[in-house]
Image (cartoon, rainbow, N blue to C red; front, side, top):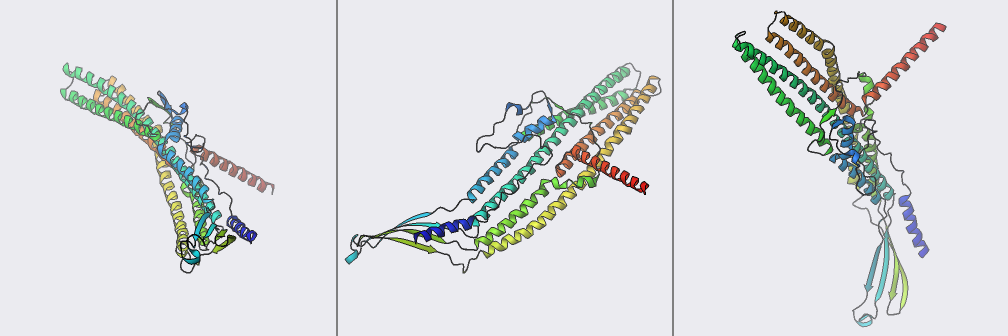
Length: 474
């Protein structure tokens, strides 16, 4: 009898674990920024130690240094990394068997007659165990593992967001630095022009009205210079916020804002949209919802409670064993509501997946339009407008030396050159911001996409050449 009871318990445990599934595929980092170390509390619950190599530099700072600081120190990213570890702990808990229960009963005492006092007392000690059936434990564990996987995808999404926001903030600092330098040059020029005009006006060589015009121009450049300084300081603070600091320690952002790379075709870029974690996560999301449905179906099967123990009868001083079996009867609650909800969550997930894909392609289209527009504007300004403005200024300046133009004509021509330079800086800024958005949507650096595009073009050329040679042989 006792062997049979033990066999039932063992059989129940085996049945509950028989459908154990392998650990699901973990979210993998996208190529964008994959080579830069990211905060990850890998040593259990110990504090992640940040080496001195991840302290903000006090001199110049490069883009890679800024990205490294942000990916290690960003508070939001650190919080999401702990969410992944918390989900791992949930998966550990989900795989545990329910605890057995120890029960003690004291019966037939304090009565009358033969059960007066403790004469007929019966003492029973029972050990009970809930036996999860239908693979509930393995299904719970699989669901918890998939939840951990989803947390990994959320972490990867935040990682790319931090990477992109840092790159964009660094671009703003570079642009603000160039604008400040240009504003300082313009203010210095306006100051020199005003001093010259003031001297000529005092000597009666020109009208006082020209002096007032030069004074207005000087005041405008001083206002622009003060604005440029404020914008640079704001951009610097916005950058250090990416790694949780409030005051910048670096003095200068070291980068090349003028570097502009050719843009691959839209169709080629669209091939990388699967690298977007907002889309890639949905494979795990749908698997998680299917696992939730399977678990809810398993919950509809009642779990028996097997008990066994020892009983002592005081009146006869006899001992006996006790066994029991308790099975809930699913007359009313068959978990039908939760099963129906899980099915509808799957249908909802299908629509949300399609919505995420449509949204990603829409964002890619907008980012590609902005990037191509900025790219064309940069080339036009660099190859034509800046050159023509500089050429016009040189011609007017030469004419001024010959007495053909006034000093204010020279000032206007110089102002046109500066305006073109400011427009060029803004175009470069727009290009790099749009490029950062595009790389975030594809999860891939532009260099890697260009290399694959070049390889595809090379393969296509070789194929066409081979095809042509085959035709010639015929």
